[in-house]
Structure formats: C-alpha cells, structure tokens
Length: 374
Ligand SMILES: *Cc1c(COP(=O)(O)O)cnc(C)c1O
Figure 1: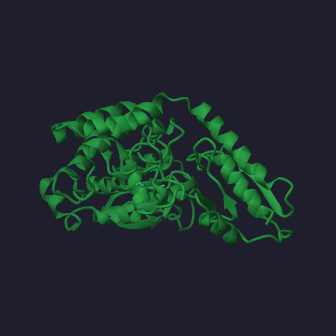
Figure 2: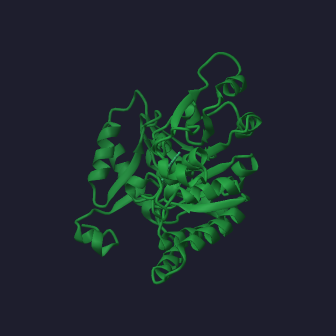
Figure 3: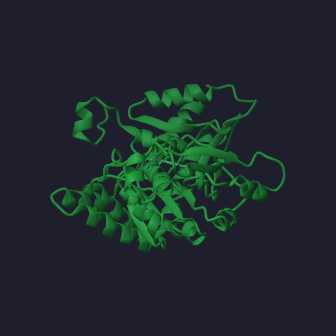
C-alpha cells in the first residue's frame, strides 16, 4: 500500500488519498508549508502568557485585515460561535457565564433565506436563535429593515458557493447600522482571493471570520476573527482559556504560531502564479474527457465562489459508460485512493486542483481517462 507520508497514519493502516476535492475538513484540510510547520515546532517548546499571546496575535490579524482588532479562533466554526456570543453576552461576566441560556439578552440573529446553512448550529450553540428574512413580499431592503426588532442581536451575512444575496454586504450593513445592530460575516472559504481579507471589513462588517485551514493553509483547526475592537474583546472573553461557551473550542499556542506564519505567507505570496499552476493542473485533468462521446468537459474559472479553476465533467444522453457513482467508487478503491467531488449542483464530476501536489493532476487525469474508456 502507498505510504501516506506519516508513519503514525501508516501504522493505523490508513490509505493515502489524492485530494481532488479542495481544502475540505473531511480529507484533512490543507497542507501546511514548511515555514508553518517550523513555527509550530518552535512554539511547542515554549511557555508564554496566553492572554498576551491572544492580544498580540490579534494585533497582527488586525493589521492584515484592516480591522480594529483580531483574534485567532479554533476554526471559522468557532468564529461563528464567538460572533454570536459576543453579540449576545458582550463582555459582561455574568452574561458570559449564563450562555447559552439567554434570558434578559437580545438573542436573535437574522439570516437571509438563501443563506441558511449547516454551520448555523455554531450560532445556536452560543444560545442564539436564527430568524429568517427575505421570503416576504416586496423590496428586500424593506424586508430586512422590517425584520429587525428589539430582539435582534445581529444580522449575519454568509458567503458561500450558490448562496447569493441580492443585497450587497454594504446594503445590509447600512440597514442594520441604521438600527444599531451589528453585522457578522461568515467568509470561511473566501480566501483566496487575498483581497477578501480586507474587503468585508471595508464594507462595514462588524465581525468577520475566515478559516485558517483552507486556502490560508494554516493548521486545520484554526480560524481568523476580525472586526470592531469591543466585539473582538467580547469574543475573546467568550472563548478558551476563559470558562465560557467557547471554552471547548481551544486553540493552542502551536496553532496560533502556525496560523500567523501561514498568514504571513498568504499575504506576501504570488497568488497569480499559484492560480496559473492550478490552471495548468485543471487543463491536464480536463484533457481526460477529450474525444470521449457523451462526456462534456469544461473548466470553470473565475467564479469567486469556486476554489481554483475547476475541471467539470458532465455526462450527456449519449453516454453509455459507467455512471458517475461507479466512477467515484472505482477511483476511491484505488491505491492511492483518488477523491474527486460529486455533482451536488448538477455536475457529475468536478475536480478541484488546489490541494494537488506536483504530479498528482497527471494521476487523476490517467485514472479518469481509464474510467471514461471502460
Ligand atoms: C468551512 C466553512 C465553515 C467552517 O470553517 P472551519 O474553519 O472548518 O471551522 C463555516 N462556514 C463556511 C461557509 C465554510 O465553508
């Protein structure tokens, strides 16, 4: 069996996976650059004042995001949890201990109907109740304004593939701020492009969270929170190492060091050159579909909601080879196992090139070609 590259994982009998599905948690997130790994190794051998570490690391994040303040959190999921906790309990010590029970607090977070998503549970974990808006009659801006009431703790704005909102973040911010309600943003998977680090803050968001372990390629268990100083401070108090609703979401000193090293790299690297590498991989993989009757191939590129230029294969009516399920199963059964993405949104097979190592695009292309000719 092909080695995973980890003696421990090999000793567990795990199979090496070629990741054609992007920086997904279920396959292990992303690969950390050597600088990031080194930063973690160095940090592992230290003691520091943790509160001070959180504050200083936050200052670095503030610098990179243009926000007043920042905080390293345990994944964007924790970012969402502490966004909610900060908007519900603030920095009040009694309220922090009271969560997730919310008597006496504003506890509703408004969410646009097309932004409903699985990670909402992170808001609810802090005690928030989700209140949907946007399905009524008439102008969306009026609907949002009408939905805000004395129980509204925050309005959330979620960026994700296939989750459009006809109102821009700026529009939503203007309406919410007019009623003194903060806007919290989930931008978990929106890096790269690197511009997004500052964009949502510039658009007026009060708190923004990003994953540290997706395109930033920090430790998988990290995330970034940035925003208004008072709310970031409240988030910090609602998180580990304090006894609080976020105590279970610990981020370690090694992870903080790793995330900072990853961010340092992310803001200084040549993203265009990297995109060109991904594009070349995408073209290598897309070529697997050329000349195959019944397979329509395209490369989806430029959609900011997609991570990297993405080869997509559709099976037309003329296709009489294996089904896409059979192809996925066959790729999965190989050694190394190849994971590509399935058609959640109408695509039969799509392959994200962003987590592929040199040489792996060729392996994926060869395996797909073999399936198409089966
Ligand atoms: C990945 C993701 C999350 C969770 O982020 P983690 O860093 O894995 O905790 C939340 N929201 C969206 C939209 C995501 O894509």
